[in-house]
Length: 519
Image (cartoon, rainbow, N blue to C red; front, top):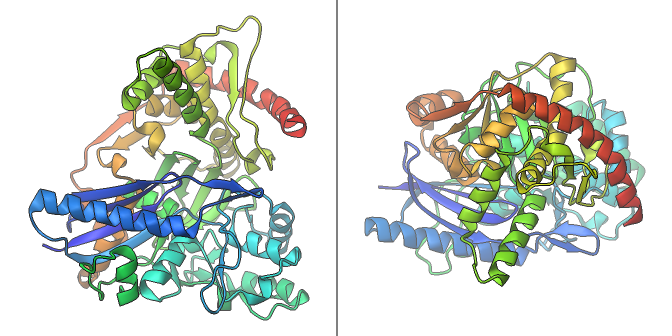
């Protein structure tokens, strides 16, 4: 039996998953990594990319052999990664500058100018904002740019030689026209006009990847690409690859939220909510952005840079304290205990408030972050309230953006599908998120599979194209037809408590501003 391989380069882990044609996971492998903050830039080294990919694939192939007694054979491959950012190569494929991830927020002036020029919200982390920023600042490499890509597009290019990108990931590089499933031509002309002022020797379409939709032919694994993944030589060239996608798109796939009216919330290092729309937003909102599904459907997105990193730091400190006391904890049990404690806190966190900004947060106007915890003299300072305040902090900025989508556009999901690290501990994140968004939150049995599974499904969809079905029909009929779903409806006490907490949180942002200015 041939399997479908999905690889996703997430913010803290590179994961590889092999599935069968019905989406059943057959084997997996992974590699932990972490972003670096170097010279004021959030980045990853490309050597670490290939070390992580090779190790993930080796672990997956070994896992498959142990489970089946056979050598892994692949029918198709898919690559996914964190969206946005800036990864530039010259004509000889040399890296021209450090890879700048979605976390970087130095592009404020460029994002503002492009937003005004296009009449379309261009967030700080989008690739076109980074490109304009580097050109405007006259960085020495800009004349040599031959290819500008996201991380997924880069890996796909090195594996196949094809400079292509799935429409979902491409929609985080530059605005997409959902009628053509390509970069918006009118905006492309405006961008090229801006670049002409700086006498750039290239135009946008010459350096950006070609846009593809789910199911399109995106090339096949070359001999060189096979060796990059598997230096042993066991992996053979010629395997087809689906269009590379971003983590937003694979999250939509993994939760089966690709049809209009469906939405999902991904909560990990960052947090974002996606709602597939019948049509684009009626006007520009700085807090909302328009991207697309992997099949090109317009999708409203509320994206926040900060989610679980601050929680992880606090949990690590609790674990270190226990270790120093002679009782080193099991990491999973430590998270479970602390998360569950939050369910027993006061609905409004007892007067405690946390601002989890490790990095900047565009939705609330911060270019930098300073993790902050505060309480009043008469607050109810308990572990339960402390953990509840940390979890509510993960949801607060998201809720601020969601209020605009709901109140201004009159659009609201009937329920949200949750996935990501915040939902790993059963019930807790799901229950609190339902209260924060005032909407039922569901978690699928398959939610823990994550983005690597999502891109593997897109590889399987590529293999099913002879059936001429849509992506939506493929997922609904072949993958999720019998999926178990757990849904939690909002508790009125959680709604009331979160709304009270949110009022305090908004006031605490003034303190956060002072912290950024003085610390």
